Image 1 (cartoon, rainbow, N blue to C red):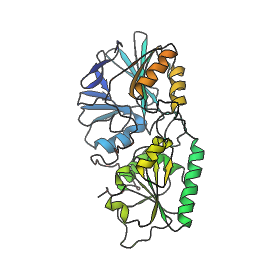
Image 2: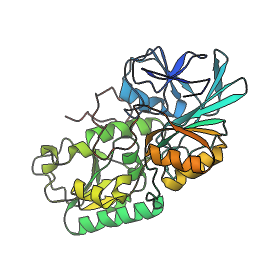
Image 3: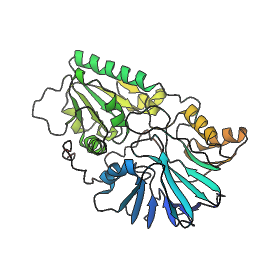
Length: 354
């Protein structure tokens, strides 16, 4: 890596002049966190800095005892002569790109980001810079997302048909970000909405942050012999095929992910329907965003790294890979059932999943 403002260390990306890390994967004194997904927000740091919009989501993951400082989008602070500001990444609630500036050089660490519509978080802000660190989770031309409206219309149709057939509709979606994005587009007139405890915990953090979501009920309790027909249940992928699922009886199943654009991924999930919805940028989103930054140097951290690096070089950019432990959206991974942490208290809080 040839950036003067950042260097690679065993703990993660480090800014020597400012003496802080960005999304470190080992415990450090000062960590700037782009968002609360488990591969970016790790336990054990002495001080966390995150966007104000993401405070309650991050705290729901880290617990009440951690020291979290917040910074509104667009405002800046200075550490060791390095001006630091956070800008919306459009990924999940509170997600941020980190802009660093010192002696006229500007570097932006994007974390994960998307450009598609999402009513539950602020849209991506393109930040002009000299160097841009980007993900490439879906960095292949085959990945092109349908519009949000097309997605929610087809989703509500599927739920309505399941109800008319006398079945419950059980959908698997990651508990932070994707589940709330699905919720925001649901038609509550179709039937009641239930959520797994891991999803309800994140719902509470979103509501506590001021994001409106349809009414939901905790799906973990349930009276013995309850009839779930007509209901929609949202659960993390790790709940698939478990004893928890069996209590719902005859269900139509679906999985929500960008990977559902690939036939093989749909087969592996063994569900009735796959809905293509991702909290990452698709191929046009990645290419257009990188170009819009005006960056002369681009570092690609995770996903389809070789393909993206080669394509960027063909466009005349100084592009190279950057080793990190970030993972992006995983087909077989579920970060929804991480170590429990206390949920911000409000009227929508619910008990933890048992």
